Image 1 (tube, helix red, strand yellow):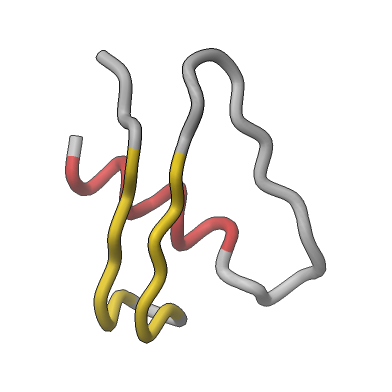
Image 2: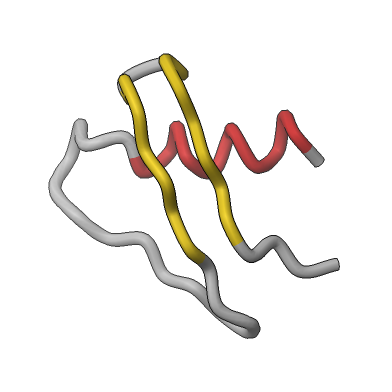
Length: 47
């Protein structure tokens, strides 16, 4: 299964976000508290 796009509206720390994924490995990086884990948890909840 390939997830090509994730759109969230009022999910945890995100008021609204759209993330486009590419086939293969996608890396999320950034400072603490920006919502990286929330994106991963959203994929888990929706899968």
